[in-house]
Image (cartoon, rainbow, N blue to C red; front, side, top):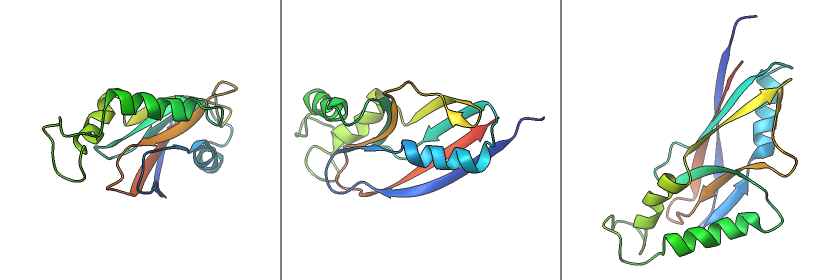
Amino acid sequence: MADTFQTRTFEITTGDHEVALDITERCAEFLAQVAADRDGLLNVFVPHATAGVAVLETGAGSDDDLLAVLRDLLPADNRWRHRHGSPGHGRDHVLPGLVAPHATLPVIGGRLALGVWQSVVLIDTNGDNPSRTVRLSFLG
């Protein structure tokens, strides 16, 4: 069977404060529609200059710990040269340098091959833009 490429986007509201949103289920729903028991790769991409994608444990504090580390590394103050938006917004534009705006993940038998505690998480520290687009692409 020849390789095929399928891609779709979905919109998600992140709100007016920093968040780590688990989007694993949205990824699984997409794969159920397009992967049909096939092996391949899922690419998750956020086409935004102030958001990223992480693979980490959620619900046990790791997601909150990541946000705390980002607050420590990237304080929301006036040190940033990029100055439009809310105070400290320049930090949000540095975020994708630390948390990439994409992740490529293995798909086996039409399902994400994640570890037991791993989830796909949208990281958004930008309270100025509460609406995000996520692009899911399957090659298999």
